[in-house]
Length: 239
Image (cartoon, rainbow, N blue to C red; front, side):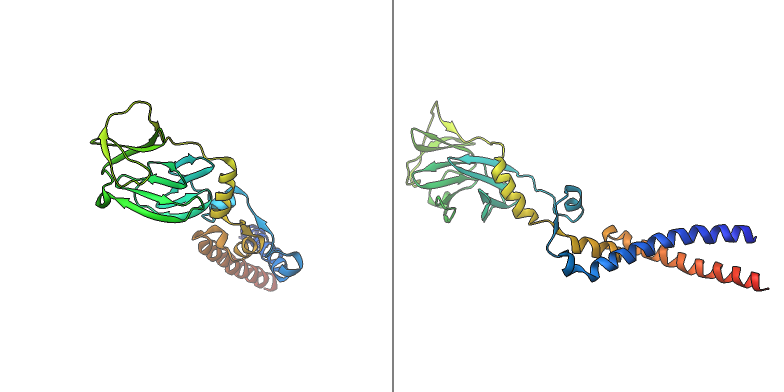
């Protein structure tokens, strides 16, 4: 019986010792946060950022308009790496008309300045054809493809005529340019996670998320058991 108790005592002692060692090391680091600049140093490991919910978002659509990159993440629309508006329907394409960026959705055209400032939303109330499927240019004039056919306008976008054309330069999806992708990663992920936060989460068990509480409870049970077995062995030796 004593042999089994000693074996159990040693096993639990080893587990508790590892936990206490972790608490001691992380505690010392937290006490010297300013000395080690833990609150200024950032970690950008992909798996760690994923763990903290800071994973790179995948664009739903990407279009290139001259030197501008148009992308949509959920309902958020970006011009380059700048959020410019919300659209709960997909961006289907875009064209440049003079100094205006014109983005097409199923039910409207969204107009922006070259600096990315929102100018106007034009829908069927001002004559824009409904059920848009794509947008393009034909000799500089905007053309939209709809479920009811093809429509062309001029730079004013207020008069549309239905016709059939060949040779329209339709807006097509593109791959995200690497430079813009890096800027968007910075937007979504920031500088990463501070070393201080990671050390603190390790110290209090929150690095394991909801399982951290159970882990702390388990260690607490081990502490109780190791205390009881140690007391039992001491009493047996005294008797």
